[in-house]
Amino acid sequence: MTSENPDDAKRAAAAAALELVTPGMRLGLGTGSTARRFVELLGARVAQGLDVICVPTSEETRAQAEELKIPLATIEERPELDLTVDGADEFDSRLRLIKGGGGALLREKIVASASARMIVIADSSKFVATLGRFPLPVEVTPFGLEATRRSILREAEATGASGAVLLRKRAGEIFISDNGNYIVDCHFAALPDPDALAQRLSAIPGVVEHGLFIGIAKAVISAGPKGVEVFGRLDEAPPGLIP
Image (tube, rainbow, N blue to C red; front, top):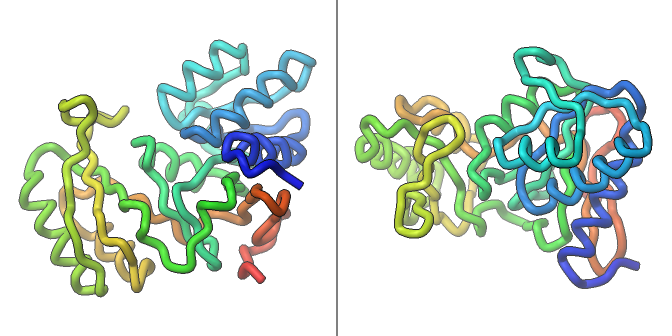
């Protein structure tokens, strides 16, 4: 059994994912509170002699990994990876994800897509029947912000989703991604058709990337009061449905 403490659950999920790491692997390191637990545990293994090379998905993760003396490379230097371990803000029964709460969605998606496998680690509260309770992040260019925001609203409404699309700020200042872009958070409450919305958002000029990760995750390792559960497949088989 796992504690109901979310931090304990995150660490348990991270520890389960660490078991997938073997010497010589090229790893993508995710961003966020759960991914941070994985990096911590990986750092301890590296200190014991584990030989890996890692590509971080954010400057925040890069700084943490450097502090732990984890060997790093850029995605340009290692454009093909064996495994990416990252968190998620939400996941559903088809292993569709909402990511980007930490602002690293573009780099996270690039690194995950360059990997043979993406394994998600999360506490059990992140599972939802319908995506959208967590605001969907969309990275956009500063130029044309209002036009892009209105296009996002229009395309979302065409898929049955509606709500406020708000520019992300921190401490009263506009949040700037590691890529120099803005992020808008879409407070839709529910996404009736995430697949269609993902396609429509990708087609909007001014949208750099959106936080819907569809068909990318191979499995989710979820931890909570019932212990550690695996949804999907940890090997390289296509993702399955959650029972």
